[in-house]
Amino acid sequence: MANSNGYTAEIMRVYRGTCIHSTQHTAVEILEDALLGVDVKGKIAFIEKDSELDGLSEKFGFSPSEITQLAQHEFFMPGMVDTHIHASQYSYAGTALDMPLMQWLCTYTFPVESRFKDLEFAQRVYTKVVKRTLRNGTTTACYHATIHTDATLLLGQIANDLGQRALVGKVCMDRNNPAKYYKETCQESQEETCRFIAELLDKKYPLVKPVVTPRFAPTCTGALLGQLGAIAKNNNLHIQSHISENAEEIKLVKDLFPESKSYTDVYHKHNLLTDKTVMAHGCHLTDEELTLFRETGTSLSHCPNSNISLCSGVLNVRNVLNHKVKLGLGTDVAGGYSASILDALRRALDSSKILTIQDPGHETLTFEEAFRIATLGGSQALSLDDQTGNFEVGKDFDALRVNVTAPGGPIDLIQSDGPKILLEKFLNLGDDRNIVEVFVAGRKVVPFTEPKPE
Ligand SMILES: Nc1nc2[nH]cnc2c(=O)[nH]1
Ligand SMILES: [Zn+2]
Image (cartoon, rainbow, N blue to C red; front, top):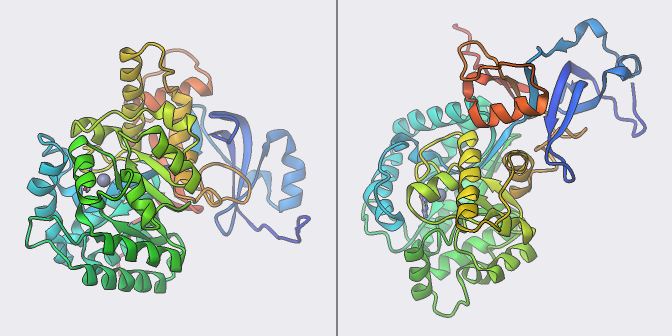
């Protein structure tokens, strides 16, 4: 059946049940007894009230007997977006949290990242981190890998094979790294970035794209930053990096780039602030810098677990939102010890409450706002909100089927709670046991289906 655009939506699956998502105007919109249709391309064909069943089944040509009914304590929510995660640091997640950033990088991070020249090691770690994040409900991830092109291409292949939507970045760094075994020159960094982009794009993975990744200003010369800005511009690519995470780092950037007005200005001067740029942390950005973020369309990745674990700072999310800067959540594994965006959401709420303790006039982040930042906000921060982030017709079906009372799970329900309470309980108390199915672009990616034996 053709709609008014002449588009025939061939339906793959229809669900009936509670759907919870965010819109630009409403942080938590609840649709009870909704009918949600997914077409054969994995896109949302319709989301309507159950009372529209007859018309929908006629228009889209499905039989009511084919509908999959969600159970009483189940709901669909959009898949969560991790806007900043170091896939290469997953092996030591949960350890090594006893130093501030710059010392932590030299002591723990660079030695581990240097191991990714070994493709077998890379295969092992990258398979685990993609599987773990998918199980935790991360349907979209923006990954930092390492300086190694072939291992980073492997990460792209693993995300594609396991069905995760991903931006994947080969890390670039050409100075101030005392680790001799983990270094590249400016020319190597630029040439390998070009090879990485060309080879990844050549794979034509539908959901995996390259992201230009200067590690951060302290480990990049101005020459390299400028070249990376040009590469991103010429190929219309995403960009990711770190900014204003801790005081020592900010001081170093001041010394290294004395001609720049601010840390943000360093990236701006090198054409690295665009509407496809995401910067991690930003705990100490000034209002003037946030205004430049807003003007350039640059977004922030809020990584509260990492900010606390490395004693870096506390981001004032309310101030970021007031500046109308796009904002998503990041786990920042392994500076953040958890690979779960549910954890990031809880730390974001805790961080906001700490600011309220310090200043009772501070307007605390609500769980509804945190839900939006974890889903729609993340998709906006990565400029992927035309494809994912909520349940708008025409977007890809990236969704979690949540069962609040999953057997053996962490949540007990005592009374008959409504859907908003169920969402709140899941966000505060739930874990992967409650995430019974995960879909990316309509494909069920959790539970994993093992390849059939020959
Ligand atoms: N948290 C964190 N900050 C960084 N700044 C530069 N590199 C890193 C990193 O790997 N982790
Ligand atoms: Zn990081």
